[in-house]
Amino acid sequence: METRGQLILTARVGRGLDLDTIAALVPCTRNYLYRLERGIKGGSARTLARLEDVLGLAPGSLARAPVADLPAP
Image 1: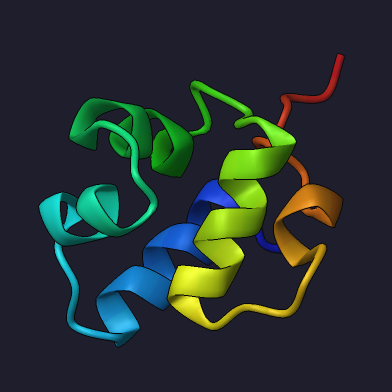
Image 2 (image 1 turned 135 degrees about the horizontal axis):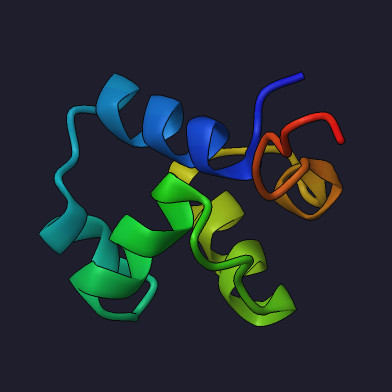
């Protein structure tokens, strides 16, 4: 299963959009988006919903995706 960050990155790149453009549309900072894509941040419900809308993702798809791949214990 793709992580939340992978879903965001894949959708963004697939639409030919850069971090600055998405940040302006959400709105949020470029750094915040970078952290979401890298799995450093999980994202608020409002931000995730806005990203889904801007990137054309199914509602709830980002909330259901794991934040990051966690190493096995």
